[in-house]
Image (cartoon, rainbow, N blue to C red):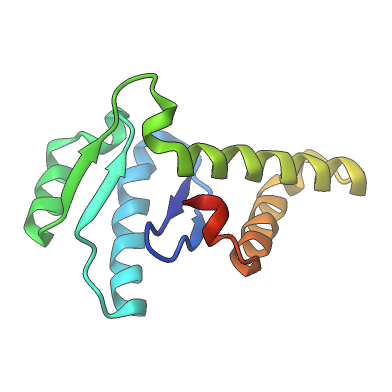
Length: 128
């Protein structure tokens, strides 16, 4: 699961096994982001995935004052930053695993490393 801070374009990857873990991972990330930055999250943009549309999650967002925008189905243009990020992470991960000849069991390590590389690159102009 990937998260992108819309202002700083800071990337966070959270490995999850099933989609039902997604809303908990997102709640944890929002809390952590608010603690680390001292700023409140006020907008969340997601796809129309069922993992983000549950009543408990929506109530949690509303209780924190977070406006939840959902993109239209099958329109990657509305969430181009996240689409670019997912494609880039996938390509970097495939390259690292292939070039190093490591088994696929190292996939999560390679994704985390790709995230760290991207967070250290000056990319603001690329993502806007």
